[in-house]
Amino acid sequence: MGLLWSPWHGCHRCSPGCKNCYVYYLDSIHDKDANVVQRSKTGFNLPLKKSRTGEYKIPSGSEVATCFTSDFFLEEADEWREEAYKIIKARPDVKFLICTKRPERIAQCLPADWGNGYLNVGLAVTCENQAMAEKRLKIFENIKAAKKFIFVAPILEYVDLKKFLKTKKFDRVSVGGESYTFARECNFEWVKKIYTDCRECEVEFEFHQTGSNFVKDGKTYKIKHKDEYLQAKKAEEFLKTEYEKLV
Image: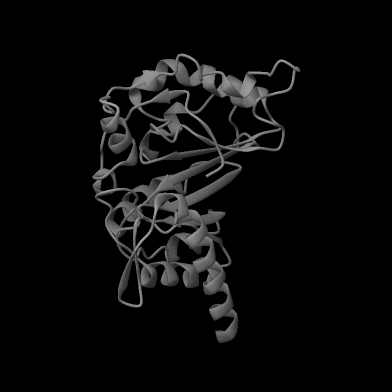
């Protein structure tokens, strides 16, 4: 996932994909309540922090996963979001990825100078199943942004995105499985179908992690969390090779 910036932490479950949320799992290990949303005491202004040598701790050209231990558009964060936007705007040399399960709140939570979107911000909406795709992408497709992504994560079934991809309003689809102890399966057949849909609609595809329970050719593989990204990249290369054979 690369660099992380968590201006606030904590979230509320809102759909099937949240059942085994990794934030809740990791917080429980440390006896923390992930349902409590709190502003970060030391990390809120991380993109502006510099080292002793005067260099930014987040280097120029970095891609930063923003608010991935919460949801950027939570109501509890309304009082902090404007300041976060100012930080984002102050670092045009850094790309910020903001992912949400709450697209219905995006329009009312954008800054006054958003226009067609800040050039250094990519917005993403998570759709873990077909029902959430139908509900969320109908809203999201009308939101202005420099870059717009669809996350099918944690993938719980094959999600048919073709009618949304054909609108040419989305730049990338990123698929990922669920992690840790109670992870539900990520079936490679679902991933392959979404990959094919993306290729046919000329939309960029990414398989960012297999999840802990990866099913391929009817066999379940238990993947260590540290290996989920690497295994997904191998599977993605396999998909590209197999697709090229067919076309």
